[in-house]
Length: 88
Image: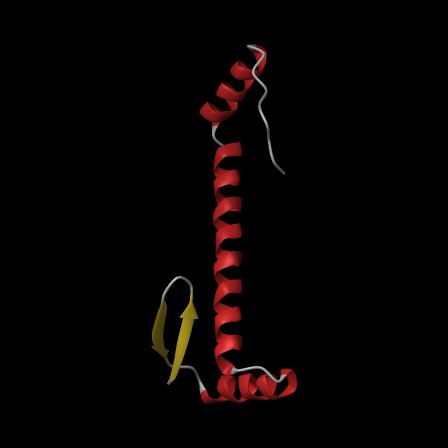
């Protein structure tokens, strides 16, 4: 088990368990990069959260672009002279 300190406006300790093999790999990385385990865990969790946010955005875009009512509304707005921005 490890205790991780998250840095935002406040600090909170978090305890979690990981497999021994994964911990050994993280310790190797810590030694190679000369950084703390806390920094590795904090960065890994931050990156995971960012990736999940991108997945949520992509899912929302897919849902919207496959929604006939949404597409019809975009067409109507465009025909009415309203600029509609679409993102790839």
